[in-house]
Length: 129
Length: 129
Image (cartoon, rainbow over the protein chains, first blue to last red):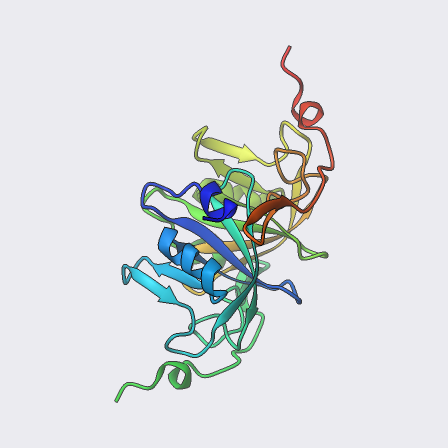
């Protein structure tokens, strides 16, 4: 077991928050959650795997959309309850087709889109038939 | 009320995760939590205020240490349960005296300090008498 895995303080649901940041541009892409198995798999394979709280199962990032995340470096915060994953994001991190999930900003009280989608989610995830 | 405040989906504890990122260097500094009051105060004053889960009260960042965070821009993610705060961090964001809470990285299975503290916490927070 890696030191990092041993240092994580999983919460009462067995989860730890993980921030994904593009390693070269430093853009914050998303925040998701990991359990012990998803973190161990990520460290072993170098492909980021989260835990989906809604689907209650491992979520191999990009398994449906092809928008994978390759792990460059994993960091942990001072009290062990948050991870910072430096990644190489293929395409769009967000299920909306946006590069980053954080594409809306407060501008003088108005929520404003600050980026355009890279891709159509209907293409990434398949249109309903 | 700002659009942003209305768009937040607070969790069952009334909290939302907030990532603080230095606005110019793009360094991820920390992750903390906000309730509605702390977010409203932050948007109104431009000084970042979190909610301390351990102390169960508003946590005006830097009120003890002087290491304040000035809000530059607030962003929200696609599903409204995480904020990205672009801030101007005065000094050390971390209670250990480190600039960022994410100062430990996994390097081939060994957890390694990748930065030196900016300040001695005993000076920032006062030594026990």
